[in-house]
Length: 273
Image (cartoon, rainbow, N blue to C red; front, side):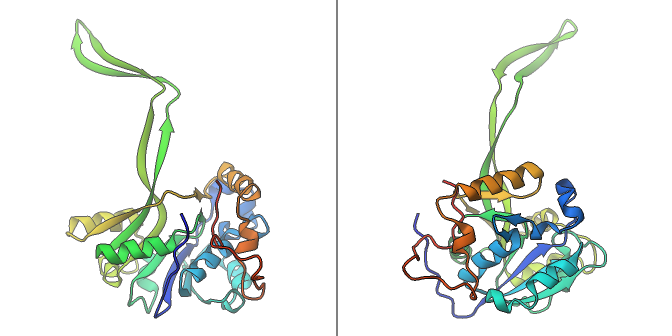
């Protein structure tokens, strides 16, 4: 699907969660925070920031914790990436939603996302869906399938000391919509977060639903990879090397100008098809 242009009167803000230890990615994360792990020639987080900039985001707050000094040294104030970047540093972990209570100026709809998520270019459609739905929160979702490696039996009532088997399915496949780790929130959502306490996004979403707030889904059908484990990082590297569009080329920062002869409607995509 061709990428939609975004017309933004006021540049949006985004909060990117970049404070986790990335324990499942050791030994690499012993020396680098997860958002600085390279996919191709650039860190994961730099690719994310390039897409946010193209979607009309002008200001990004990086919520940092583990090895925050390395992230701050690399991205600085964001000037060379065409963004204004500031930092919300955690001395103690506040979870995935708790950092929002420490960030000032979230007085308009904003993006919140994990700093280790690679996607095709979803932000314009996500923002459009959020605006049209009138939701307090919109979650980008994607269908994920799991295939069991065993035959699954359906058990019935007990008869003569043994349960009756009423069905049998060999290696079934189950599918569910899952969160991609990319959200859009209205500013009043922060009022539902306990101040200064660890609090996670699933708890926030459950609280919003329980209080009658409208929580919407944006169903993303493009590429998505959560770089949470070594095999996910290896898969992302493979996908980048074989992508129809080279994200290391197309997510240029302002000091790496785009040659108009090379530009195309797919600039900014991470497309593994």
